[in-house]
Amino acid sequence: MSDAAPRSWLFVPADSEKKIAKAVASDADAIIFDLEDSVALGNKQAARDLLKSLKRDGGPRWWVRINPLRTDHHKKDLEVFASADFEGVVLPKAESGADVIELSHTTGHLPIHAIVTETAASLFGLLSYRDAKAPLVAMCWGAEDLSAALGAASKYDADGNLSFTYRLARSLTLAGAVAAGVQPVDGVFADFRDEAGLTAEARAAAREGFTGKLAIHPDQIAPINAAFTPSADDIAHAQKIVAAFEADPAAGVLSVDGRMVDRPHLTQAMALLARAS
Image (cartoon, rainbow, N blue to C red):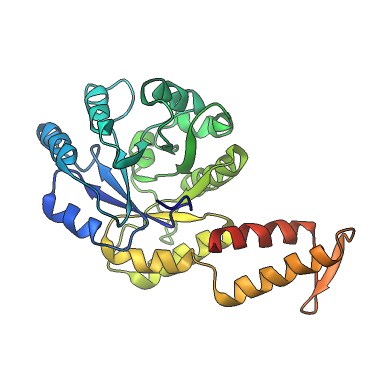
């Protein structure tokens, strides 16, 4: 199993055998079997039973989004992790690093991917995830639940762009994840039929510093994987920067391909090559 951070994280309802089959056969780097929002209350136990019966045979890495802490279904959801085929747990409605630590008390060293902007209180705790004792590996953001929590009529402004509050949540997630030393994952692009819009949003996220993105349909996987895969030109340029500083380790600023590069450029180049590998 690869240790590389997934570029694409594909949600799939855990109670749908048909959708699960399509997700498993997709080129997603990771699948998130959803036991929370996409599964009706009356179907949650059937969804758990279905997950317990699955056996992984290659393909995407398997994760499970459980129900939030301190809810009736939370403890029952944890039973599915008796199978070693599930790599990690996705925690929704996280409000602080304390929630991650609380979950780890029952899941041990199981990796945790926290969704960190789904409540009003969550926006004030993004720095609290910086705790080396917690098995946190990724943080992502969500606008739908936050919009509902805030009582908003829409998360978009008059021009059709995300309103300031939701752009703020996205930026705080990026900064919070980097501060915590974990993968920053961009949220979903809801219109799975708009490939051009998805491609533009994913490429913008990659430029900003996100290294992966959530998906809600298998058709979104190829554009997401492409957006978060460094191009051959990007790799070649990064290799030149690294080589230049290796040749002159005492330098603070160097010229590479006619442009001045400094130590922050070296850091970016090394991170890009790590992702490419």
